[in-house]
Figure (cartoon, rainbow, N blue to C red):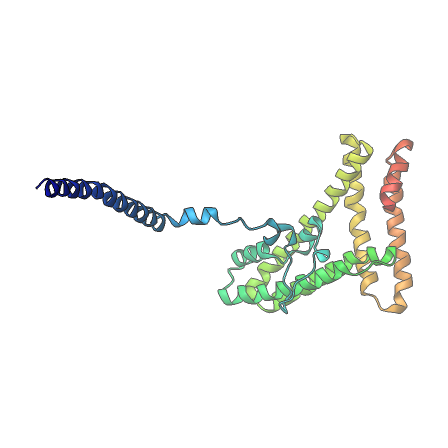
Length: 267
């Protein structure tokens, strides 16, 4: 009897001792399960935050933007236009929107003008990138830009209605005047800063440029468009007009300003 009683007590002890172990095992399993469920339920943003950030070198640099040519190729960065040239050249998205408004272009007309703008700007970029082997080649880029613009003006007037062509003519004349005035103002501003010119001196200088700069540009345009046998004569006329403008400007300056002015002209 004693043996049986002891065995009963031992069985009870064993059974109660095993229960906590089983509960502990169940708790560990439940803990692992909870962690797995929590991980699977984590927001996608948390996982994204752990992903390594892309290297800056993989992102395109804004400075590397290039302009597409009509054939789908891209112009290199070396063919970009300066701010002043951009205004003279035009033919960009901004001008296209202005024309669409001013001329009341249809969607089809706007699309065609936009395509011609692309061809025109590609030619301007090629001209800008062409080498300048002599001072005259550099000087004649202005006439070439204006000639390309004149060709664009002619194309637009030939591809719109007569009423729209008349409106474009008025727009083009206004644009030319504004560009010319800006060129004069830029020259005066550059001289005023370099030579420390006062208000009266700037006013007299502006009058000189207003009177002479257009003559110089017209002479340069004539030289560019002339046949080979006429070029020597027209080149001489251009040099005479440039010399006249330069001499008139020098007559307005003080002796200590002359050297700085001549360096500016030669640069």
